[in-house]
Image 1 (spheres, helix red, strand yellow):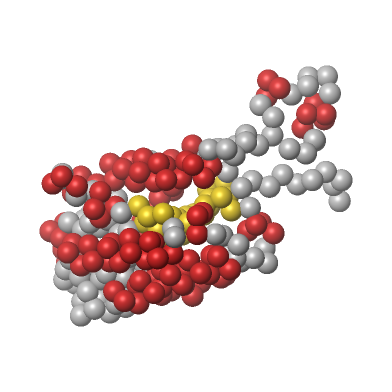
Image 2: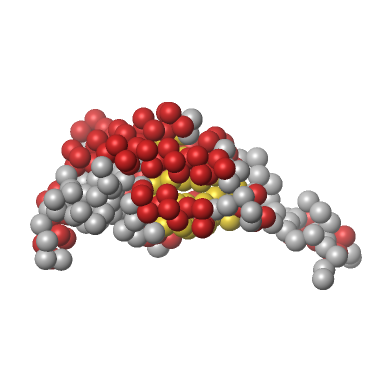
Length: 242
C-alpha cells in the first residue's frame, strides 16, 4: 500500500433527467462546466434519461450517501427534474407526476442530500425549460403518439420548483422564465421542442455558472502547476500533501 495520501478531487454532481444525461455531448452544458473546472473539481454526470422526480427520489440514496468517503467532498449538486413530471397524465401516465407530488419530491431530495452531508447551500434546483409545442408534437407523432406536454403546464412545474427551492433554502435556476423573458424567441434554445439546442446548452452554461462559480471559485488547482515542480527533486513537489 502506498504511504502517500490519495489525491481526492472535489465533486460537482449533475443529477437530473435526459437534459442532464445529454449534457456531456459535444458543446453540452455539463461538458462545458467540466472544462471550466478541470484540475479543480470532477464533474459527475448522474443524468437519467426519462426519469421523473419520484424515481429520482428513490434512486438518490444509491447514488450519493454519507457512507461513501468519496461523497464527503461534494462542492455542489444540481437537481434538474420536471420536464418528464409535467407530461400530461392522460397522454403519458408513465412519466407524469402531479404538481403537488413533484414539489414534495424536490423537498425530499433536498432532505436526502442533507442527510448525506450535502447542505442546502451546495444545492441548485433547475426548473424545466419551456416547451415548443409544434416541434415537440412532431416528435410525439413520429413515435406514434400525440402531443403529451404543454408549455403552460411546464410553467406551473417551474413555478413549483422555484417555490420548493425557497422553502428548502437552495438556489434555483428558473430556465422556463429566463428563456422566455422579454418575449425572446425561446425556440432557439430547443433542438426538438423539449431538449436543448447548442444555443440552449450555452444559455444553461452561462446562467448556471453564475450560480456555481461562488461555490468553486476558491478551490485550488490540484497538484502543482508544472512550472512550480522542482526539476531536481520532483518528488518533493509532487508527493507533498496539498
